[in-house]
Amino acid sequence: MAVSYMTEEGYKKLVEEVNRLESIERPAISRQIAEARDKGDLSENAEYDAAKEAQGMLEMKISQLKTIMANARLIDESKLKTDSVQILSKVKIRNTKTKQEMTYTIVSESEANLKQQKLSVTTPIAKGLMGKKLGDIAEITTPNGIIQFEIVDISL
Picture (tube, rainbow, N blue to C red):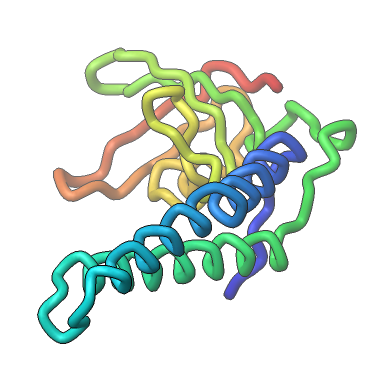
């Protein structure tokens, strides 16, 4: 798996999620399995099958999150600059055709949340903005063609 850059806050959320899954979800599923097992014949026990499947999915999720944590590199926010777009930059862009303005914060894939205007560094828009400076035009290839965005502001 590739290195995942993230903020200290994002890493803490990941740790909290793993702790929650291991200390709350895992025991709950174990209880469901035990209750279903106590009901007798396992060959025709749908509850048992469902609980075992849920357990497998939970263990897979825990494993995936632990892999992300193992490959995480925390970003030293004190070294970030605003002279060009980089991870954790808050970027205000303007569509050169429609003049519509949008503001996004470029974050790691695990911290992306479009509702909070947090764009994953792996998205086409973020990739097109990376390294650009104030006033630059970024040409972003989308399914609808190439869209040009002017960099209006870069902040942290």
